[in-house]
Amino acid sequence: MADGKKTDDYVSRDMGSAGKGYEPLVSTPRSGGSAPIVATTNNPVFPILSYCGSSILMTVTNKYVLSGFGFNLNFFLLAVQSVVCVVAIQMCKSSGIITYRDFNADEARKWFPVSLLLIGTIYTSTKALQFLSIPVYTIFKNLTIILIAYGEVLWFGGSVTGMALFSFGLMVLSSVIAAWADIQHALQNYGHSETEASAKVSTLNAGYMWMMFNCICSAAYVLGMRKRIKLTNFKDFDTMFYNNVLSIPILLVASFLLENWSAANIDTNFPPLQRNRIILAMVFSGLSSVFISYTSAWCVRVTSSTTYSMVGALNKLPIALSGLIFFDAPITIPSVSAIGVGFVSGIVYTLAKVKQSAKPKGGILPTTTVPMSASSQSARDSFKS
Image (cartoon, rainbow, N blue to C red):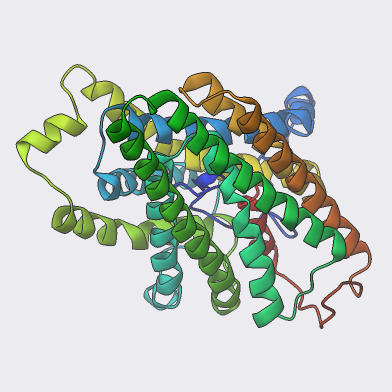
């Protein structure tokens, strides 16, 4: 299943650790002839570009499926992505590329509440992306960071510095500008017809509502996972495997019970002329979640957690621009300004976290800081991309 994220969205579905103690994904060469390959894999440029490309790819493919042909089988889409993801990582495990634990019923029971929160996160994410443009979706996703930060203050003894507060203000400002630009564009383009303008604004309002639910679910997922991961000590692909395996039966049941599986609706979701293309995009979006997990771990391994966090902040810009390039997202001064402010807010927040790590005892809301596991840090970073 994709994350969210480490996007947005993807939402990436792994939310695993990619920090200390991570086992290299690329095997050590046995002969001198493999040195150029290792030099390439250890060059930070390649994993950074791969991570950014994977994030953009997943967001664009999800948007294509969700908004191109009146698609409304969201639970089914997520189930397909989960199945593809499990099959892909199992093949990688069999090939010796990655490692993760075998399924254990006791661990599954402990992790099940986290998987439920993940389902809420990715479902609301698909609904928000269905109604909103990619730039607006990316900008509003920043608000999740605020909820997570104050959730950690309340439940984990975290702290919020002045610089972080400033970044939060920029995040809220960028969201307000984006919403205002969206509504103004709708009124200007459909103002000649009150009915069309009202319908367009109602669609945007539905998107904002789903975005609000997504931010709440995303924050609850990250905070809940931080507690649960202590019980299981999951690592990188352990979380990805359990998240997807536990989600598949729930998503399939929800799809068959709650979604319309009539012949007419199937034709609406999968028009004969575009059917193969849509199915291919669904499968590809599932593979994208594996790519994001792999490249994010690769990125941290050859650079650092700080560099990875900064890449996540910088990655917002190309993701937002992809919506302007590949879809009909409005290009106006307010919309571009919102992207710019949101981009700056991500950079300021990352710098604030770097400074806070250097001086852990500082902050406006000083409390005892609880050490965070690598898995939890990776999860938080994932919502920045």
